Length: 271
Image 1: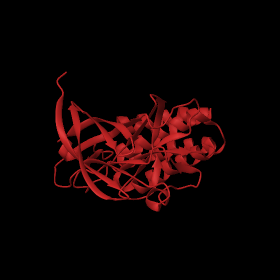
Image 2 (image 1 turned 90 degrees about the vertical axis):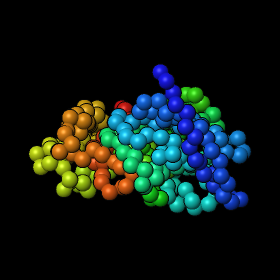
Image 3 (image 1 turned 180 degrees about the horizontal axis):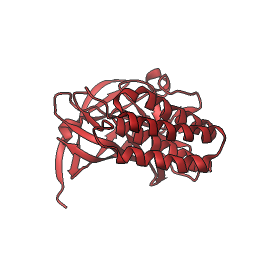
Image 4 (image 1 turned 30 degrees about the horizontal axis):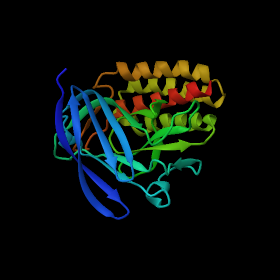
């Protein structure tokens, strides 16, 4: 398969000031890959996989990385719980901020993977991939972790800041909060969803939440698969599924799919 190497601008922020750097970004079909290397020996491989995408290029993605001081409030104040810990061994934040006037767009969820040797994978690792949209609070988007030394994979319906943290909360708490978030997200975008589909999603997600609250995780996971089918089988006229760099529309399908997939990940951990 032919691979095209494009040069992407990457901003390096450190406590000493602003420094410019560039990293090669490889584009192959609907996949973009780059390696960010920052002073201090911090390095991360970043892979983005799109279901459908237009205008995919290094310039349009605008990928950058910076080091966030674990003692500062840059990241700490945006983590939703004291049991979620930024890692001094890997304070690197990846930022993907597509240029507003680029015409770049995609549909459905994006899968992102961060791979770094600065952290070590272990069985039952608490390391998770977190995302912050538009400078807001970070949230767990993890759908898989693996060795190598650590690979953390997640899904999302928009692009923002990404960091690997240690989440020390009980998995039951995580599952409950993710189920609540999925239900709240459906309510938030209810006016953009076709009425018949909305009723079906409300019924399915409501059943997932009921099972979660009752500790019936296997039943919740089975029902969540039905939720995911409703989302994936919906037409664009039923469920908006496009994000574009102008940031003027909501990729509701991508966000719901991503929220359900990270809930499924935590449910499997809780079984």
